[in-house]
Image 1: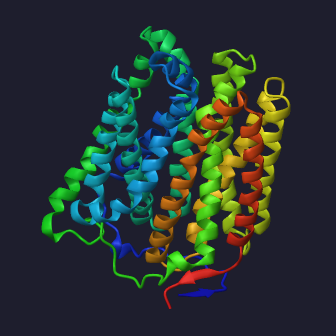
Image 2: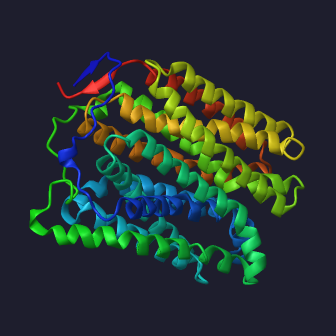
Length: 417
C-alpha cells in the first residue's frame, strides 16, 4: 500500500456505469424516503427509554442496550452488504432492508423483553445494509451531482431523526396507547418508503440479464488498496468516525434522561433533544462542503472536537439552565463531525474501490466503537448514581477525537499502487 500526497478529487463513476431506473423524480423521492427512515426509529426511542425501563424493570445498563444493540449490529452487519448487492442487486437489497427495518420496529414493541432486544438487532442489521448500499447507489445514479445528492441524503437522515425525537411524546399522548403505540407508528414511514421504492426494483428486474453492471449492483473492477487494515491513516479516520459516533449515540440514548433527571419536564427534554438534531442538519450539510474546498482538514476536525467539548461542558455545569445552549453547540459539533468523517472517506481515497474499502472499514470499526457509548454510559450512571462521570469521560473522548481528526486531516490519499 502507498500513501500519496495530493489535492485531487476522487474520480466519479462514468456515465457508462449508471443505469436509468424509474423516473428521476420517483427515484429521488425513493432515496429521500428511505433516508428519512434510517435514523428515525433510533431517535424515536430516546425520549421513551425511561418508560421502557419502568415497563420491564430494566437496569440503567440494560436500558442502554436498547440503543447500543442497533449500533453494534450496524458495525457487525456492514461487511455483509457488498455480498448481498452483488448477488441480488442494489435495488432489491434496499427494498428488503427497508421492509426489514419496518418489521424490526414492530417487533421491538411486542410485550416481551426478548422481542424488545430482537427488534433492536433486526433494526441494526437493516440500517447497516442501508448505510453501505445507499451512498453507492446515490453516487451511481447521480454521478455529476454526487456531492450535492449525498448532502441531501445525509441531511434527510437527520431530518428524520429530528422529527422522530420531537414527535414521540406527542404521538404517545395522541394515540393513547403508551410508548408501544408511539414507537410502533414509525413502521408506517418504512412501509411508505418501500412502496415508493418498489418501481426501482421492478425496472431493474425488467432489464433482465442484459442489464448493465451498475444495474445489478456491480461496478467496473478497480485495483483495491492493499493492506488497508494496516494503514495508520485508515485507522485514524475510523477512530475519528467511531468516537464521533459514540458521542452522538450516547446522547441519543441518554440526553433526554439526563435533562429529566435534573428536573426538566420530559416533554421539554424531548424538544431540546429534537432541537439538537435539527441543528445537526445544517452542519452535516455545510461542513463536508467546506472540507471539499480545503487541501487539509486538520483545523476543521479540531474545531468540531472543540465544539463537542464546549457543549458537553455546558451540559455538565448547567444541565437545565444551559440545556438549549448545549443542544445548539452539540448539534453543530455532532452533525459536522459525522459529515466530516464521511467526507474523509472520499477525500482520502483515489478510487471508488478504495472508497468502498475505507468506508467498510470505518463503518465497521466506527459503529463497534460507538456501540460502547450508550451501554457504557448506562453502566457508569448505575455505579456512580449520577451523570457527572459520564460527561467527564465524554470530554476525554472528544479530546481523543481531536487527535485522530488531526491525523485524518492530512493532505494524503490511500491508493492501490
